[in-house]
Image 1: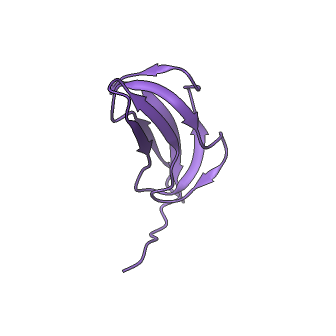
Image 2 (image 1 turned 120 degrees about the vertical axis):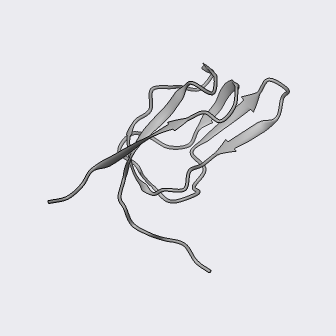
Length: 85
């Protein structure tokens, strides 16, 4: 029996979505850049997460305003441990 773990990725900052670097059903790797968000002070934040898996939904789009309460994507964790020393 396999366990399905889904994680919601929330925006770490307030701003505007500049770029969406992934699509639904894409496999992403740990710390891969997924989104670029332009903060209210004009800085570009690169959004990545520490898990790998498949993107199951992306409810936001380029140009959308986001806050720290905004879900950027949902990822189905593949539960693989990767990385290097």
